[in-house]
Amino acid sequence: MEIDLAILFADVCDSTRLYETVGNVRATKIIQGILRQLESVVVEGGGRVVKSLGDGLMCTFPDPVSACTAAEAVVATVASAAVAAAKVGGVNVRVGLHYGSAVDAGSDVFGDAVNVAARIQSLASPQEILLTDDVVRRIPDSLRKRTILVDTTTVKGKTVQTGIYRFRKLGSVEDSIDSTVIGLSSLQQVKEAPLTLKLAYLDREFVVDLGHPKLTIGRSEASDIMILSRQASRQHGAIEFSRESFMLTDHSSNGTFIRTGDGPPILVRRDSTRLVGRGLLGIGAAPERDGDDHVIRFVCDLDL
Image 1 (cartoon, rainbow, N blue to C red):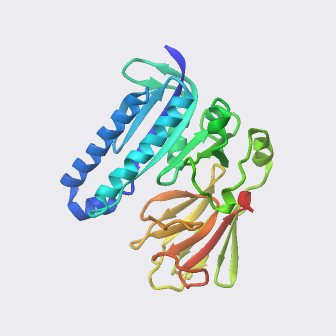
Image 2 (cartoon, rainbow, N blue to C red; image 1 turned 90 degrees about the vertical axis):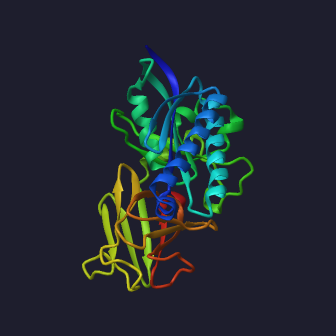
């Protein structure tokens, strides 16, 4: 049966340290316990857990409002669990939400809407909720004013680009780059604007865009940005322009730290994540200040 559904994907992430600290068996039990809590949150919020996907869940809701409310509860639940697990390792969650037509086969749900929701979730940062414009245009002003357009992307099966919005925590104090909420009327203008990621390392500047879609980082002289710090690996990582997003991929032993605004740095190690806004990259160590030999400054032109 084909019906309109709000589809939510939640993936518990950043558990590498947890597994390394307590071992696979105990870490698995902790993650499974968190997933059981999330299942209860979804059901209590009027949703349905369709299936488990590794360390994540696929869920459906009858409407976008109940899905947004449940998404917030999911992030809050994992944040609470992370406090309890802080002594042995950290955990986070990435949430993606889309509304559209899907085929409900009873035991599973299929269709383009499912693919879009999964894609949006993959673009989210830890503890971040991302919504598509199909969700945003169907929620009341009280919720819509808490969204901000952060990107657009082309999703498989879609002929037009999809607007991606961050759903901000109620009462949160956003960094100045996020202080202006971009309305739906501005979406087309943003889609037509060329996307550019600007980076600065010591006295040099670099650009990643459609004409220069990939930039490598590392201690090797062959790297586009050659890092002088010994904390960096020779082939440390890369930044690529892909599907209207700037993706950072880390290949190193020490990892790459991303700090935006005044928030704490987020570690990415042998994994990929999307860069948005502006901030500092710490290559092999947490970034303390711009100008250090392991620190790269970055800014996306959408936030200028």
